[in-house]
Amino acid sequence: MQTLTLTRPDDFHLHLRDGAAMRDALPWSARQFARAIIMPNLKPPVVRLQQALDYRDRILAALPAGSDFTPLMTLYLTDDTTPEMVEEARTSGVVHAFKLYPAGATTNSDSGVTELKRIYPALEAMQRVGMPLLIHGEVTDPDVDVFDREAVFIDRHLVALHRAFPELKIVLEHITTAHAAAYVREASELDAQGVPRLAATITAHHLLHNRNAMFRGGLRPHYYCLPVLKRETHRQALLDAATSGDPRFFLGTDSAPHARNTKETACGCAGCFTAANALELYCAAFEQRDALQRLDDFASRFGAAFYGLPRNSGTLTLERSAWDVPAMLPYADAEIVPLHAGEVMEWRLAAAG
Ligand code: DOR
Ligand code: ZN
Image 1: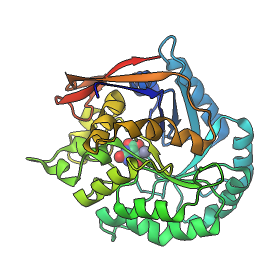
Image 2: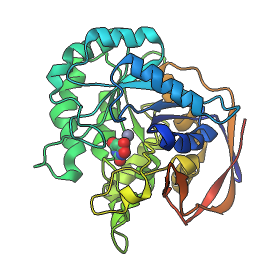
Image 3: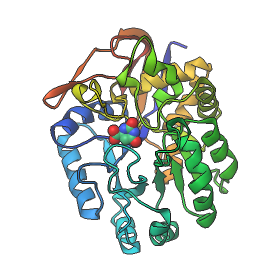
């Protein structure tokens, strides 16, 4: 295969940040994706509808001329999220999901949920009005090994939550383990249209790398993200899930920009910046399984079906043509290091239309 034409894809998990950082990060996503689910972990977090409306306006104002990119907004769940806030968000038509960060799990999650029982009234409302719940699925208990935190979250919390709210639409975000893939496959029934109630997004970095990438010849901060990369058996299970044609698994880059100096430091931030070469990275992953013909479903169909959105009308074409990923890109008043910086990529973005 020398060229690959996809339906214009969507990114169902994206961090855009705000201000000058957002203005530099956004064009990379708008170039490839028609729509993206925008994470609400700003400082302060996007908790109320009005904050989401204002953030959306800032994103739209920062789009390159002629771009038709649509930001799909989310709200950040806290212990104080009420059923009324859920209903108001649904009525707005602008908010497409609520994000659950266990308090302290990752970047800007300090205002997250301290105990799941506290948000049961909000979850009940979300189930009732058909508002999806997006989960950062890691326990925050410091006694749990960092490589086990996703599996422990599933066993300690997600199984019970899914049983308590069987009709609630749930996305377990950026899954990293065989355990998560198996749970989503087995626990999630498809409706009459073949749409799952429980689904998972998978990043390109978790499809392409195992935890060795963080330690290859020294400490490599640009491969550090949360949930952290796992061992090779888990990567293989994620590749199985992504390339299986199962609608429970779809694309979410979790592209998480951090300026270079905040990654290359004694206590570096978690996050891989993949927006600048997202589809090229997914092509490399799918090609490992000779499954490029499955990428369209994963990138452009299953996620939209889950969120009840129409399929995009445009296309995106990639061609097999080697190119070097830049070592750095401009980012606010600093620079950012994209994933695979300085390396050769086999697939190149050819056209979007
Ligand atoms: O690696 C990550 N970076 N994981 C997250 O959950 C948050 C994200 C960020 O916002 O930087
Ligand atoms: Zn994220």
